[in-house]
Length: 82
Ligand SMILES: [Zn+2]
Image (cartoon, rainbow, N blue to C red; front, side, top):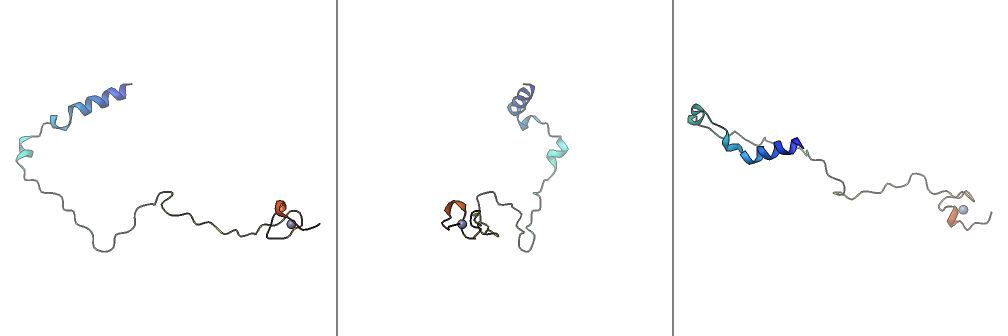
């Protein structure tokens, strides 16, 4: 696997081998200005599955018996005489 070899070489060498030019070393570096924007932060995270309990949808159409055609029970629990 060529990709594996390339990756291991990169990680062994590390970022310190990179030569920093002198004029860059002399420069005074300031940290980036990171200010939190005013106002309420918008919710930007999508909740993962299982984070919120799944609300069971109420059945729009109630069970209808296929035997006596009455609602509220099904064929297997039907006790009505035909
Ligand atoms: Zn029935």
